[in-house]
Length: 145
Image (cartoon, rainbow, N blue to C red; front, side):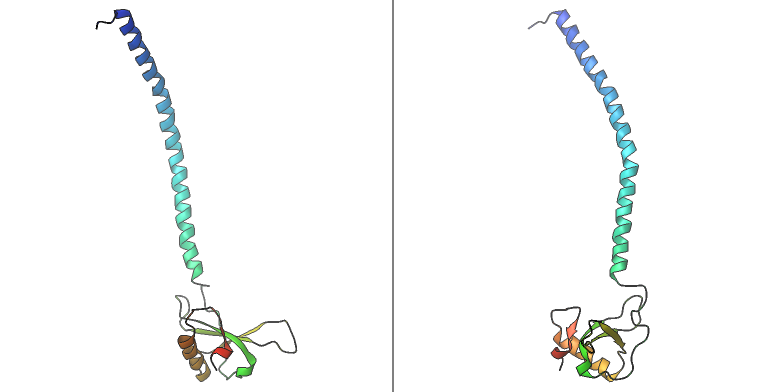
């Protein structure tokens, strides 16, 4: 089938116009993408830094919690619960934190650190390792004795 020359020329002109119309749009889109990429990269970098920092902070403070530990025996009746924190990257030894029972109906929570090298500290660590199967952060003293 033979098309008239006039139709073919109009068709070509429409094709040229439409491709010419896309050229500025593609140019604008590429500029937009190039302007967006550095911002997206900075946002991604910020997210990576935040994730890394959250991992560092989850490890605990950058020092031991217990600066002074008790070397003497604490009566079992005075201890409500205790927590044991294993050695961490910023603390060379395990830490045992005792939560003492309130005195005189006080609402104040008293916590003391117990040296893990004392006989009582060793016994609490053994109890913690044997009985704390749910891996809770604190352990009732009554569960040990």
